[in-house]
Image (cartoon, rainbow, N blue to C red; front, top):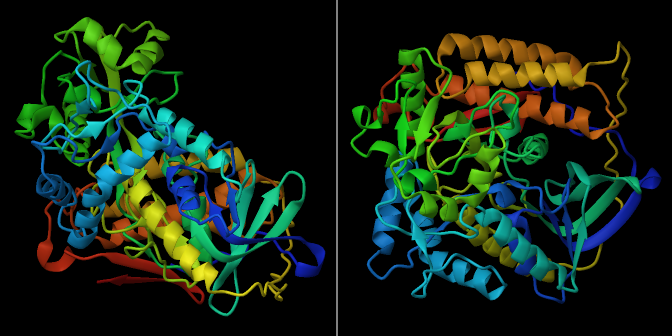
Length: 544
């Protein structure tokens, strides 16, 4: 795969561009980004840049909750084992143990900062259970709107800190690099247009890539921007073939693809096909509580058997008042389409949900580029392996946000205020040609990715997809756009091609990666990671 990706999305020159200086730059305003900001001591300045409002992130849309060993009858060892099993052999056991053991402390911090988790009438936190977990250990809020409540509290707490500045509706175009070190980022704002943000240390917390797929639970902001700008800067990415598909996404023509949390299955909901037949036990002894990759693949198989576009969640056998109390937001969403979740079956099918792979980081959140740290969904930390265990994502954002914020602060404190406008201007590019229909290309890309690199993959479709994406890249990536829609398309094309390349290279099935032409797990050849980075004029891929 040749690299026709220009180093920077837009040309710029330090003498013709506005400048801003800060100790710590954090790109992304989700839970990982804000937790990183809160780890920075008050004597250091922090700038948080987010391309939409702070409330618009995958963190805010999280329904299920945060996994943590809270119940005295639960054990750290069980949470660790559940995570390792879900990760299908590619988890880093030291990382898993670190994150799991920090969970109670991080959940406690959220409570101190004003998060109101659901509690039992007798006192204590109410704990739910989700697929792949051996115990009830999921803390949740507002029934099925944990992310909304957590982000409300964390945003409020963050805005109180005098050393933290927040720029909303600001699109990060690229990382600034010089001397093989990250020096900040080039940001586009409504007020200044292009602005060079100089930082002693930068933390990447841009979230996921779900919008690359036609069917997705992700909000509109999840266009793989962080993965793409890291790749352009030569940062190592890892395991990008592993995109997790959530098994149960509301499937109604004309409606948004709303997530139907698997906490519903944790409460006892059944998955049934169009004939009302419960089918999950035929695929896995754990039934509806099998890990997400198993449930997603089973649903795809059942849809194929019944020649039907979806399956259904059935809660008619459960206590109706408890269901309404536990899942008020899902009940409200379904009611808009005339569905009463107490008695009506909810039509669902899988959708792209969580980017398991990403920027490679160590336990402190360091990337391969000095001066750049990362946390949250944009990363590949070793926690998730080949498949993320339910409700470990917000937990990872909290743990790695704290680590990256602390580590970047220590590094920044040792540096002098010697910011200078280095000659970082990129070569100008000529546009030329006919105007492009950006939306048409984007829709074609998302449909192609769903068809070729979705829940099921095979070499023939992946090879065809690679060729088609390369065709688009040839005339899209060399263009110079002046608005967010064009930049997002360029980022999506860049990362989609990396994902297809990795999926084509991994000739086995593992976790969320199912190759129908290589249906077995091959530990002898593929119990290893795929590392990608931009090298000269081509993408470099190494298995290790």
